[in-house]
Length: 177
Figure 1 (cartoon, rainbow, N blue to C red):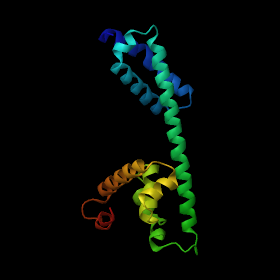
Figure 2 (cartoon, rainbow, N blue to C red):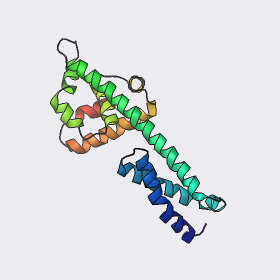
Figure 3 (cartoon, helix red, strand yellow):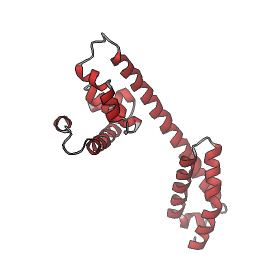
Figure 4 (cartoon, one colour):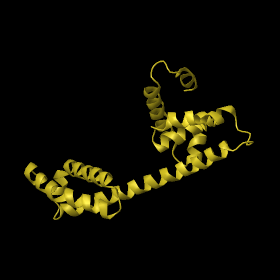
């Protein structure tokens, strides 16, 4: 497939893929992002697409698969956040026997500190630091892979370091990590 043929495919496919994403209830920014990813995959598979009678059908299939994956990810993340919210609500109840760290985690200061994090990063950081769970326990609680927990925890630490700055008490988090 030549550059001109790819450009023609892009001009035809991109708006249709965005419309497909919107029709499947994806928010506009997600539909646009997934359509861009689809067209990037098409660029990488240009030689293969040149042999197809209908490269647009291939693009629609790739877009459909990514929409399904995105929906599954959002559903799993929402479930994890709901579980974490239920645990946080339980910790906030007086007389639950929670540790002092758990009370700090349920406090407004902790909530404000982790607010800029993604829902998954908030859940992982809270379970790891406030509930003193191991990485494996966090993975089991949130029903995600251990590698996903490690990645989310690393990203959460990086974001918190930027938020706190170099002299804002990161030493206690450093010792745990």
